[in-house]
Image 1 (cartoon, rainbow, N blue to C red):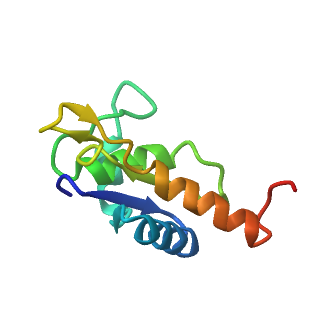
Image 2: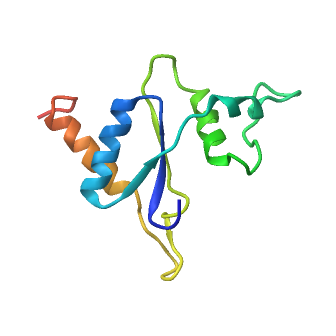
Length: 118
């Protein structure tokens, strides 16, 4: 996704839309990619229940499919793949990418009655 955009994976259109809106509100670009179930078989293993690396091709998608295996059925979830924008190569420093978008998303949920205290 380059140095300024993170991949967004989710099993929920509503959650993905909310995270995308939070990213737009903070200037952190998110691009939703599909959970392509056609790649799920790349995680099969002859010696384990599941392997955590399916090769380079489709790697971000298969990584998200791997995470999906550990989420309870009926639970909305999202994964932000921040590998590209997490590091500023010129400055040699981490960027903290994603923190502002997640904070924005949490605050929006709190004020929308999605949880949280007083």
